[in-house]
Length: 344
Image (cartoon, rainbow, N blue to C red; front, side, top):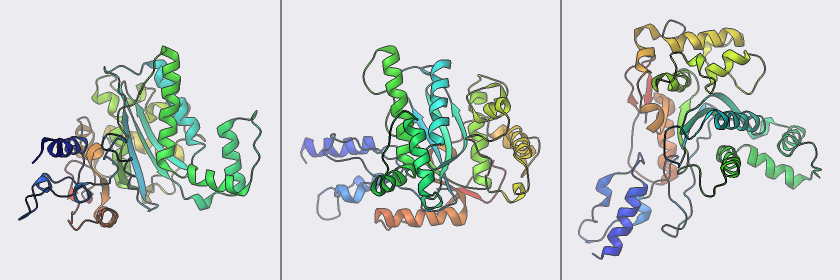
């Protein structure tokens, strides 16, 4: 086999090293032919995969998103610059400003965030496009461009923007690109600021969403920056502690049955108690808080987290999306407050 062919396949394997569905056995030759499997048979298309345009003469792979109102997303994006403190206080403030502003432009419901020194976490859900009127779309376009810009609205423009505002990839891309331009101008540099494409884990609303949110809130505690998440102003718990629970871009509508009749203030207290492992929902006193003080790969490297029915449904849709036959089932997560939460 020529060196060029092996370099192609090794390069492809390197780009897909973090992909959940990649099976190393697929790199073996087809039985009886002596030829490698075709790229179409080994190329996954999932939220965490990454292929860069131009490397193999192929465009970016489209992301897999669940067409399900229960599907939220844990977004993780890292910087390309070396060091753990690339994002200082001023950079974190501006990134938070962008998240806050664009979350009111796009059709998203944001549950939590955490901005660290070299990466950020965002927990959100895309809202159905059809629940927004044309007038609401116009209002959001004006919010995006500002009052000074004159905009002539017509049917095709509204249709185009409606699709854009309901696109999770465009939402995250907008945040990252605007921050990159601001940062490069500020330090007089050129080039990429963010590394790779962002990671995304599909999280079912309800108990899984609560657990994922608690994990995100404890990022600065795990890093040893603060002793309490409320003391860190660039995480949602710290933000809520300072700003209160009034009308804002953050939501605590986690779709928990026991929270339905609670006020926002009561939900905030339940969330805080859950994060600290002192009470609230489930059985956090039996180790949830201690468990989340360590890095848990299920919340950052899985494909999906939720109830067994939700995760199995996600796996089935993904298999259809990829056109593959291999079946996977959700696996139990040890340490979370709910025994029926599984991951894929």
